[in-house]
Length: 224
Image (tube, rainbow, N blue to C red):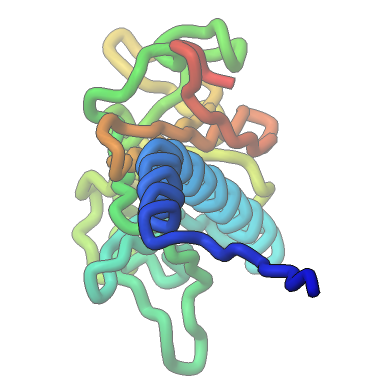
């Protein structure tokens, strides 16, 4: 009588399979972490751009000037729409300020970012950023008139603007510099993300003088 015997895996064979799987996982993990980090950066940039669109709409709806600012809440980076011009995030109460949480550890800074927006090549105009913003307070929100309050702003027409003197309105093309020259406002906001696999990922959100909002990522030595 023939007896069919099904041969199983030996302990040695199972160990070999496990080792192979561990090697493959070790090879794939850094790549997967890099993909996840890049997706977090892209999602945060899109969320930031969406908040800017909300700011633009609210500025025209409320006939007001609004800035999009950044802070940290419970260790989480947050971008918010400053409705009362006090440069403090008010996320609760009767009139909570619109906000988006950014992936941790994203920081919003134009320090040490890759070049590309420092000339007119990408936007047709050189944009301002947080370190070059000439925006000053008009005295509202409990902030002394003339105090520097750098940041992206939209005016009542839904156009990017900067107020260069306390007694002036927030203009889309203010007269800036010495000697003074009129320069339409374009703006770039940079996001930096320290990858878990090493290195830093960069994204940017730009606003043209006409109010067109666009997201960018830095890849292969270029902004795309």
